[in-house]
Image 1 (cartoon, helix red, strand yellow):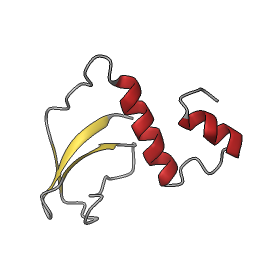
Image 2 (cartoon, helix red, strand yellow; image 1 turned 180 degrees about the vertical axis):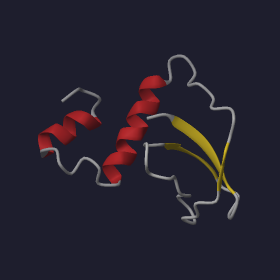
Image 3 (cartoon, one colour; image 1 turned 30 degrees about the horizontal axis):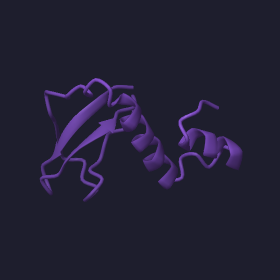
Image 4 (tube, helix red, strand yellow; image 1 turned 90 degrees about the vertical axis):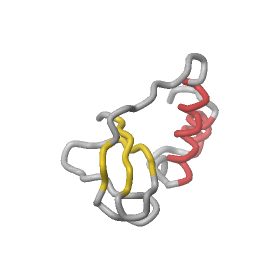
Length: 83
């Protein structure tokens, strides 16, 4: 599942999305599917990978994507330890 940068043609927002095979991405601000895929996706700077990964885990947790894990497993995920 590749990670792409997008530009929303409706509200002009720029964001990145993990694109799954059959699911078309939509804008997180306005919900529009009128998106332009940006050509360059910047790589994470050296030494910042862990901080980015933890930020993404916190965002996923806030969206309820860890709800299928037990509370102790959720705590380990948010502290950066594998389940």
